[in-house]
Amino acid sequence: MSVQSAKRRITAVDIAKRKNGDPVVALTAYHAHTASILDEHVDFILVGDSLGMVMHGMESTVPVTLDMMIVQGLAVMRGSKRALVVVDMPFGSYEASKEQAFHSAARVMKETGAGAIKMEGGEHMAETVEFLVRRGIPVMGHIGLTPQAINTMGGFRVQGKSDENQAQTERDAKAISDAGAFAMVIEGTVEPLARKITEDIPTVTIGIGASPACDGQILVLEDMLGLNVWTPKFVQKFGSIREHIEEAVTGYADAVRDRSFPGPDHVYARKQK
Ligand SMILES: Nc1nc(=O)c2c([nH]1)NC[C@@H]1CN(c3ccc(C(=O)N[C@@H](CCC(=O)O)C(=O)O)cc3)CN21
Ligand SMILES: CC(C)C(=O)C(=O)O
Ligand SMILES: [Mg+2]
Image 1 (cartoon, rainbow, N blue to C red):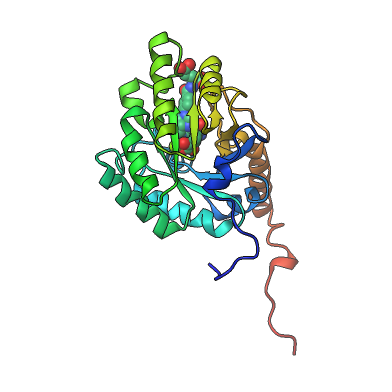
Image 2: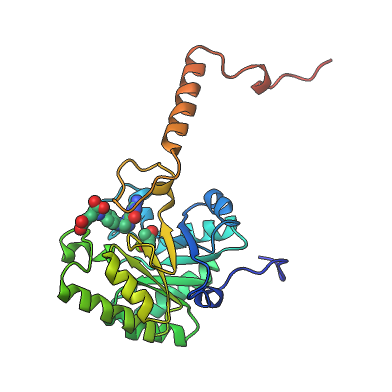
């Protein structure tokens, strides 16, 4: 990193000011190349623990490690210079105690240079969120459908369908907001709940499968590009990257088989005498 950069990055403080303003635009990225494409078009890039499922074919995000998040977080920092980079805390790296959370989050901040971290959880994580924020780590919350809880939820379940669950999710939002999170992801919740939370709390809400009522939106990049075959219902495919890759790969395979590749332009010759 340079001593002084010409254009400063968007900060967590900038995002926090976007309540009732223009919608906050966010996408996930795990690589330097994709990060460099998103950099000019989004407000923040999330290095999501969804990378376990998207890059590695895991069935959930539970096996993702802190080291995996740090490696990809660093890649995304190298590829970007304008957008805020937020790194997800993976399952098992923060839930045991606020000290464990600080230790893990500090590693992410020091080893990647990212501007903020995100952690899943409501009321039960509020004390931890406050502990980190007070010690200089901007925290993005994540409530509603929290994928790391797949094994206690019994699957990825849309939240807010019952009165009891709606009331709990509202308490979660309030607790994370009061704890000082600069923004929070609301994932997989029924529309009236996402709307009510967004109206009731002063914290910026970022929706994913949580209706247009939120202050911003996020999607997993590979889902909206059309690279992943199956996606949750809340995804709109804005591209069809899978077909582009298929076309390029079959073109290459055909060219190798009929010996039209490598062609004259791709061959090294000896020095002319
Ligand atoms: N590629 C990808 N995209 C994501 O959005 C994403 C991940 N991976 N991994 C981490 C979590 C997991 N997510 C998920 C995964 C599955 C559903 C899902 O099965 N949804 C059902 C509805 C379930 C219900 O009705 O309760 C669906 O059909 O959309 C939702 C969110 C969102 N996140
Ligand atoms: C889906 C987003 C919000 C996320 O947490 C992830 O990509 O891991
Ligand atoms: Mg995540």
